Image 1 (cartoon, rainbow, N blue to C red):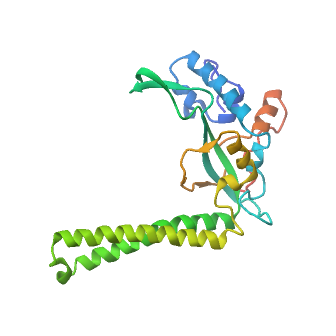
Image 2 (cartoon, one colour):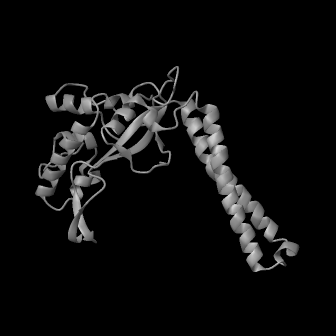
Image 3 (cartoon, one colour):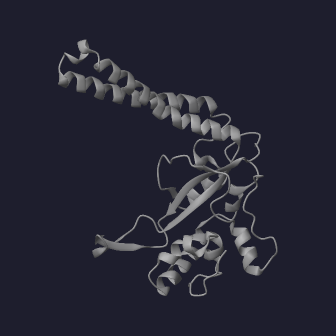
Length: 245
């Protein structure tokens, strides 16, 4: 990783956690050194809010398997937030009365997932949208028929609107039914993962109630333990992936 001696967090724990070249690091966009130092102080607070076994989310075994753990084949990204440390911003476009932000800490967790659980989650997510899209396509084809179109624009619009709503609800029901069928094998709620359950007890929450599934081959952040070892100068400290290239 490129080193920038002018950066206020260079070689710090935050620098090792971000683990990116300077031009790709968000700290480079901060306006002054005080802001960089504040980012470093806030990061220390963030670390204190994480459970000691947080690194376990990036383990060699799938965290979503309920019973026998499958081998990790990649990672699912989850965006966690916490109200601490306290952060304020102007009420009107950054100006005026200060109000507290909902998010004080933000952590992207790379959670190990096997091929089977990844497939189950993707199918459950796709079912929510495939069925509504199919119903919408059928409705559009139906209203293009001259006999249907002749009933008037308002009824046609109503038919399409009801089709979209019905398809959306049906998609949700089918997706839920699929999850129930696969629930004995796969955890679909990240807070059912023991480490994530501890995070919720400490005040962490997902930025999105229904996060989009984003899977990567490599984790997006380093491990806390590896970061601490690197600070002590231990060899072989940074381990970026359990997945073979």
